[in-house]
Image (cartoon, rainbow, N blue to C red):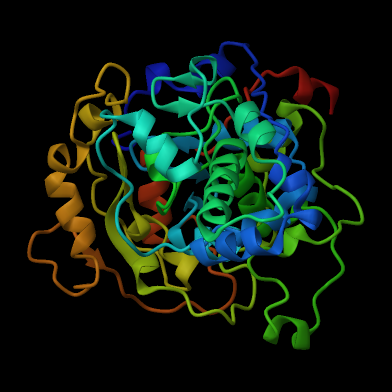
Length: 401
């Protein structure tokens, strides 16, 4: 059980004890998404240029919290992967680029979280929010929505840029990185940052893309549409004919995942015509202020079309996982995480594995769908080191079926 550390605190322990929980997704009425059709084109062009433009297409997507809950049950923080009966899988940087359309290369999202925020707000937004709209270095989304709903007719380039920043903050706070209350956006200093965070929007699309037995029904794309990039960044932004998730309560979805068939999980889900950054294939730290997590793609080689081998031990980042922004407003995160940032900055030296931490994996491509028999070397190791099935042996769902 070497990759099942902290099992005594994992949600599966509570499931086996007969306790159920349901995650309620954080929702906030995003003005940007509701009014994208009438968003001033000058503002929209700047949002597109920043790399956040594709997020405006996600206004019609509504995820089932039952599905999200069942997925979270399979998440393991020490490997940063989902443990399914067929092997480990996860949301990779390639998914961030192909599903959300967000850039995955660039500078780390970090900086100082204190200082003269009043001048900072005035410079970047053109307004100083009232004290009731600010908590620490976070701004209430409701204030952003009310203040930046309409661009002045005679807006200067500076004012247009300020509105674009406000809308980007709203996208971050309502879609990418909602806080526990669903009412505040993330630290204002990441307005121009590049984000990689695993949240409901991305996770839901990822699951639909990979697991065919729970995905909604879409009109198939023609070969010509694929070549034209119609399905990029996410084909799930198109109108759906219906939702098919195979169940309406968590135990049902949990049982579907436990009994998932070989052909129901797609390791390489669709024809990709977009060139993805080579960073998507690198074992590298992902950094966002206090947060450091490893992009452990060597554990999910099949998602790149390679045969899976036994991966190296996961990085132990227990101490880093305890870090957060609370009470550390004066900490200069670029210095605190200087070693991890150096590894990220060296990501393009893909073949330099001298430090044992940073490398691009290569391997043998598989034929077929990439699934492995239980008697294969990798699956034998996986079976002996993880929990493949979560449904309690004596469950009410089993009794009813």
